[in-house]
Image (tube, rainbow over all chains, first blue to last red; front, side, top):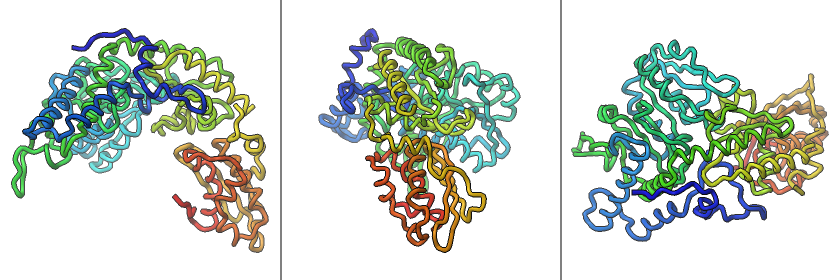
Length: 411
Length: 127
């Protein structure tokens, strides 16, 4: 049972060793958690402890430390399952990251279920990781790609949804845009997709770290996310899918661990979830993800979301006073997750990011792996500030100061 | 911000680039871009008896990429093509006169890589 704890930012900051660093003589102001979050000591220690005390290949080992490794790795799976309210840990497939989880669905379910002329419905705001795999599948099986468009506030235009779902086998959609911060109404969209006979895959890379996610309540079919954006390590991600789907799907990668019985010319598959986990898994990373889930669960994801809603509301308010700034994404913090994108006249985002780095402020500049969205916005790149449990409103103030200094340099 | 990366000379080239524009009678027109940052430039080269008779560029992108293009045009105009075909990247970096971080190197070298593509068909970039 996890102890609950109020989300006190100063206490939270003390949990993250990296926040003690100084960059260019200034305290690190880390505003790039949408790219990857920082890691609390609890996560680093959990992984360190595995390597120092019970490093062994899990599953099948009959000696003590292998059993300990198995218990820790599978324990992490159970915690992840509870965290997203999966029906069973068997529905939680560990992958390398969100991208690999989506590609698993593309290769395993997609190839078997999507054929010539079938539709795959996506949105204009997808990260390349939830776009390129479907481009590849579509060209492989001669399927067609359809897109939901966004309005000028960065919200999905849903009025033509029923029509766009005609002949669609899969709707693949982000839960929260990594560039705009838009939180999409997944439950309603999933209901419409199911009425039209389509399955729903959600890219939850920006959602699971930042808000309560209940995969059953959302009513979706596949849900993918990454460990490293939610206080966990890189190299571990999750595909959740409904059990009946996973049972029916062919394996993804072949090799050790995913088999039940192997003969020279054929093999049968292991039970879920291991059927989809070929080879020695990322054991330390899985254990680290389990620790990350425990870390977040002590606050409760409602508290995490409330904290970020405050930060985003504050950031939108402060940034809109910067002369000449263009802010992207929803004005309403209720549907705007913890990422704010903007551009300035006469200062390229890379120049801005370089200049504020001199002040110790880490923001991201570029297309954020959403080039079609950049085309839609009519810009080559934006600057993005993104927030997490350890950010304070005064860090927004520092960013605004940094922007104003940069504007003086370019005046 | 006391910034050497954005020292006065670079900002001056960025705000008032040299040889900016097009050459309608260019012998070679070459586009170059850094898709990752969205920096783009187009070089217009007018050849004159084995030399670069005239040069113009158009572009948009970060200050480093655009200032470097402007500085490059000063360095190459009037020079023998034979020399320009192997124009060393380091000469441009010396002219920029600042420490370029690995993350920004593509910005700093876009213009010279585009020049080499224009004259040789490939950038000969060492990476």
